[in-house]
Length: 232
Image 1 (cartoon, rainbow, N blue to C red):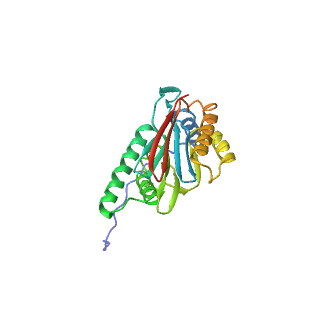
Image 2: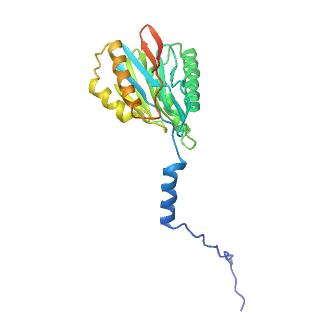
Image 3: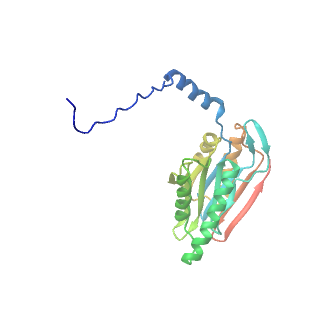
């Protein structure tokens, strides 16, 4: 007897894909962490003092174990009251700084007033988060002055936004932070804060081979932004 009704098509046999053994996956992960993935080093500091903010970073640019340059710039002026300092790939730092400058100028023209430090930091966080699948390899400190006073924000590669009074990023963080934290006071003068930051970076340079060759400063006060540099 013939059968009536809808007959469902039969699916072909799907070949099984042999998964990589867990031990081999572990070995490949360790290999990637061991030598195939690297990040340029730096020691970059930001701190709020009585009357403003200082951003500073050493000048060495490395490619693995090779020193590419002894005069790299990792501290950038964004507006007359805001600056950004970075640790990571120099090209990514420059792209971020230019993006912040352009967006801050557009904001000022649209709204009719300067962009705040919080808004500029949030803008940068959005840029980094939108690039999370193809990230810009930078750790970033944004600092400046606005109607709310002095502000400092720390951002990672994925755009996490953390407010703080002082911060250090880069390969020399552990050493520099110990010196900075021991002597930090929000009531320090600009001269005292500059000396403290200099000591913290020099302490990192003495132990971190990826940092060295001088310090660039960005000093932000009510009078504007002043850039200074020292060599050692």
